[in-house]
Image 1 (cartoon, rainbow, N blue to C red):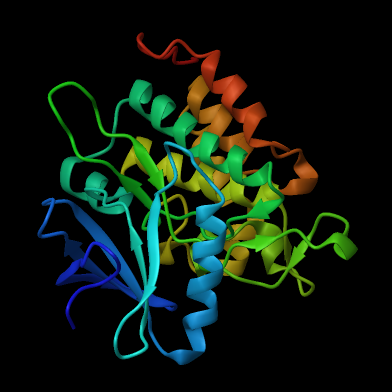
Image 2 (cartoon, helix red, strand yellow):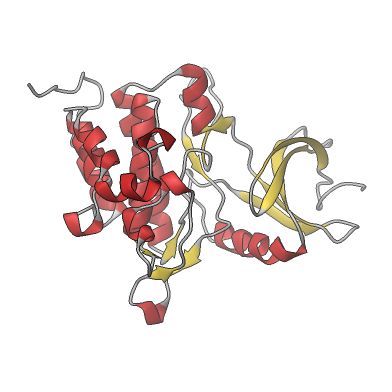
Amino acid sequence: MSGLGSKGWTLGQKLGSGGFGVVYEVWCNATGEFAVAKCAQSYKTVDNLLNEADLMLAFNHVNIIEVYDAVEDEEGQVWLIMEAASTSLRKAIDENGPWPSSQVIRRGIELLSALHAIHNQAIIHRDVHIDNVLVTYWDDDHEPTIKLTDFGISKLLEQDAEGFAFTRIGRQHEVAPELLLSDGYTTHQSDIYQAGLCMYFMLTGTPAISARDGDVRTAVWSGVARRRAEALRTDLGDIIAKMLRRRDDYRYTSAASVIRDLRRIEPFRRLRIRG
């Protein structure tokens, strides 16, 4: 293979894989630029990859991974060339520990800003978890920022479903309670629930729900995640808890409303602990 796309990207080491594709490091010999390339696992997932490219190319947002190109190589394999980030949220927290509340607020606003942009175009991400939320590189002038990626199972809201996108999806411990219903559906609020799980992980370094909680369906539906956020007894914990409520218990209805509440918390002072 002579190189991918017009820049002749050179394939490097494998970075990871998922249900819809394998991700590699790539670089451009001419410019020294680094990026990542995602290819379909099989011919059956090419359509998913092309759909992902179409959705991601629709956005120009600082907190959404930028797509540079979608190309086909000499062997007919389809590749998605994308902006590189430093690591996943999972690895960043596992390696360096949880973040202070002020940073969680800033990174949470970035994640929710990305979701707000997506939702404004009637798209649901449906897979907002700590491996699909990336963190940029540190440098001397800027702390890392959030980059949302992997739109492989994202979906336009169905017009005939009155704002609901049907299909039960997501990893067991990282789905909103409504996805556990027999007629499982997801809305913008389902993305907000998953963002709440991400923010809880940023703040505590532990998942809000995991295998230790026993039966997944029972743990998710009973509100274990919400109660753990409430137990933090801080203003930030209360906001996260509201993101993790069941829909019929008044979860936030929009990413913008969560952002407004986060901005009301002073990020440069220690958060008030209620007695």
